[in-house]
Length: 576
Image (cartoon, rainbow, N blue to C red):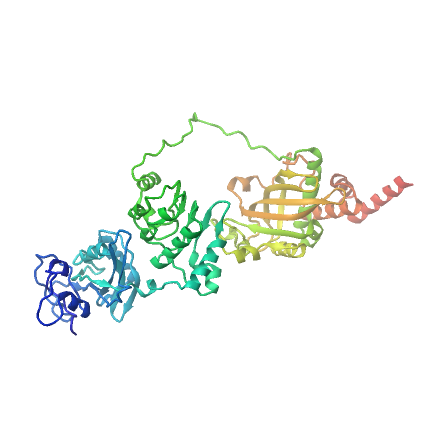
């Protein structure tokens, strides 16, 4: 087909620019009409033999013909003009028979040998060919130099000739926003703008629900979209001080070069979790007088051996202050861990009585009795660490499905779903958790806040599971309760946060030993789950505190009926 073979003359830039008056169009006109390939070759390059796919292969070499082809562009889309007036062209890379190579291997092999980082755009296979686009002539020229330098997995040398010419931009980059779409984008950006902080959050803008519902595709790594955003900033919020562009798949920063003029007061720029491969991209935003620049999660971060090298490269030679160090004499012993903190004896009695009653029911065979402990509008959540690190027997699999660890769970719908609301749902959820036995003597209690109408306290301790696949597995927990007064001497939970993890070796060693003094300094000895349930019920029915209720039950050999009769007789005698 006409124009498919390599054009062996000099590049257009090396020719006389005058038209050859031979009764037809000049060289430039012919180049624009032919769908041909123009070699990017130096003047001293000799002629090259035509590639014959079925010809002899004397050195067992695998010929890959890497062609940077020109598609006929429309004048307004074939190139764009940068701020300094230079042309910005796209180049289409075509690799005949490239389909037999794995995409990751092929691109990685080219990148490893290419002198500049590049981002392949719209990589795809067309029949047996592999094709992708790159932007600017520098990148295309560097790709041309890769020819004859790649060796495939079978130790075949990959060689070929590179041909350079401009192409229309990839189809995905040609989308320009319509006026009505720009208006919707303005509304979206106004919702994401915090006027009090002068901060604009454009994180993951393409998947913004308002834009997606209107079928508006705003891709910030497309020049047309980024320029619209910058124009909106310039016209509406030039006082902007903080801009978050994280998670937008930005692979170059050319389009941000004018940001310094649009928002001169910008101090914070978040470019984290994008596709920036070289710190040279940062040269394009040097005009900004930034106080904070976030780059974590970009490929360029992997090129530095440590954090200080990374910081110094980003700061472009600016000296860092000396590192802060602590002049601590060794060896140093940390002060011992303090015990529970209650604030006052009255609070101590109130909280310990509540915990004794709560966990006697929680560790029973039926947790429905906890309904009386929760407010009608109570809420509850469970969180566990990222993943199991122990053998399967000790894993936390039973808790995974209900874990609301907000460091890992980003979906707002799931976050809301895993928050249990109302006391009925809370207790139903607690009933589904594995059956347990808590070591009351391991409890550490800290009162966090207290007012006349609210009490916030945390409980740390150890428990073990008493049935199921993880029977006898020892866990550690922290529970944060927020409670309000109930009756004269009780508490009612309005918020309950439970954190569960596997116990450490030291915690397991100390768990469920015969109690010496407990962290609560309570005289109550360790009781079985059945005795704890009986004690809580007897205390509630009789109105006596836990200490006297336990004494009555112990004196009657834990015979609930007989203890009740004795208590009734004593009560009648006192009244009489």
